[in-house]
Length: 342
Image (cartoon, rainbow, N blue to C red):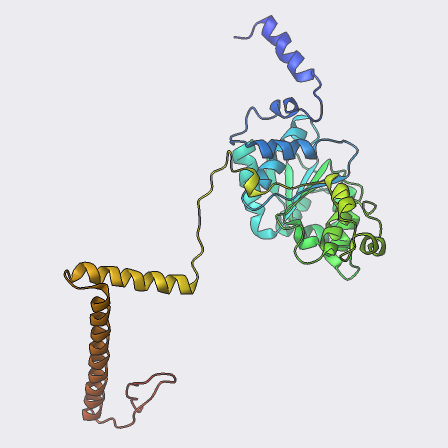
């Protein structure tokens, strides 16, 4: 039973202000979270919440390091601060996954909005389906098609998952990218991708334009300053550090254990198979050397080949006895079976 002292203590905790770069800011909103957090995820969430004047960040951790958890921490904190106009834009195939993770891991209400749900909400008398008391999850194509309604909503934060699919948003020919840039202009965004750079630096430039058009200037100045072998890589890293956070797997091995995987090439597999066969033969024929066992294995293979040829001849004979005399040779086969005329 809470006493007057406990009530005053809880009121103090709820109203106390925390620094934006302190983990205490996140602790208030994680009482109901059912997730085991890693240090790099907390750092990424604090990085996204660091500056209220920033237009967005790019979280580019490697695959499997929990970018969805990092975005969920940010959403959970904003929800606790009563800033609840929250939008998640992702590929259509993972909308349900986002909804389940937000509800099960962070106890946050979420709704998947598509064309059918949009029309049903309109028929129920709600003229603004995007304005709801839950986190709205939409696909990239649907957000692009509903650009007018998306722009009209005063979003507190927009999460864009698999943001590398919009890496060419700066090109006028990229219609979906251009629509989303216009619809989300001046909205704070968090971009999630494991591959911010695949082929050229222009892809990184395209992602930056989703956050702010003025980070690198126009395309011509970006290429002149950072393109080619003579580009200013030191200045590029400095610019990226202001809005990009990337963690690699080799940086988290201290507290994240990964299964060690070894790639086997066809050559190594055939060598291992030959070595394993030789070992089994050596165990099966005691007193013989591995070389003699391998020779025996070769002779057995020849016997099996001869047996298969006799079987094929006998099979031909049976088909001939049945009244079929037209053979059929399969392409690439030394011994072909007969062909039955219809």
